[in-house]
Image (tube, rainbow, N blue to C red):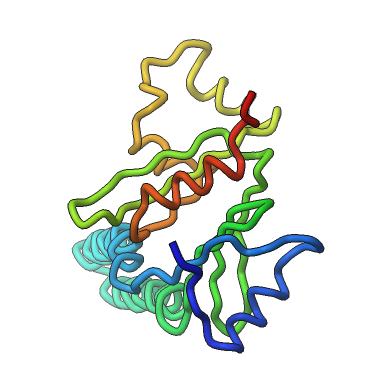
Length: 196
């Protein structure tokens, strides 16, 4: 498993986000099509909602407001696409202290989880050996209390259900990772419990 060779400007941007004593063990830049496919659902949902509201307004004899709603909805989706899809390069990084997802656009946005925060790591694998890694973090006491109140004391959901983890705001997903099993093993060795 080799380290991704980044252009010098990107290497400097990644290095600027590292803590003292932190070293990069693995990094990867996913293809834009895989990321876009994951985010397409939210864009389609926003467009469908916009079309529905515009239709209701148009059917209610308010065509000018319907046009305003339609243009506003399209503008919001276009702005989201520009901010999150076009011109933003995502890089996944595993260091000796944390896992990070970095959006490198005009500004750097970093989402990370330290090794101590990791609750579980799961993956799915495709026929070609690539797949997705899902990192779930431990909830804070406040988040756990809110989750318990929402679900009640007892829940029928399966704790190993990958879809539940993907929809979890306490989870981060690395999409389209080549040789996903090797990266999973690297994360396990780095952040797993020490050998006895």
